[in-house]
Length: 223
Image (cartoon, rainbow, N blue to C red):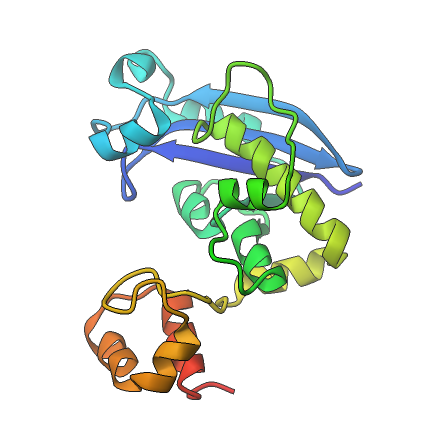
């Protein structure tokens, strides 16, 4: 019996340490075994993430360090996260395979305007059974949303574990540009009218693997 552990972290900043960790398991298509812990970070919480997850310094002042709680989150067969690259980097203690629901969503619905967790929830009318008192961008709440989204996607796509892992490993094609002078235009349209802009971006900007892959693909540099 395979245990999928959907995991989420909230942090002090994009580059900073964990202030909250949570998980739920998916076993035989059922969401179970919720876990959640505040974590004392090694640096102050930046105001930008604080405004999103609403976790303050006082809430984590007496919390344990991540090394004191991580063991209870280990031991699953497959780990799942929305934007798994982020959580995987924060949790190097986890050595099991990962599945990224954001990449799965991009694969299943390539032309959606967004592939964010909450967007997908409302776009497809999903109704996660979240315990009372939780709200979006708290780790356990987001775990329930991610788990519900994964179950819905696989009810449509019927991926095997191997297929989900392969999608996760590869760069994913993006649909709409999220920055720059062509923000909110499709990569295909930009490549058709101004391929030089993509060449400039590739030479001068720090792009993630999905942005770089999509620009090259849109220009026909990849087959």
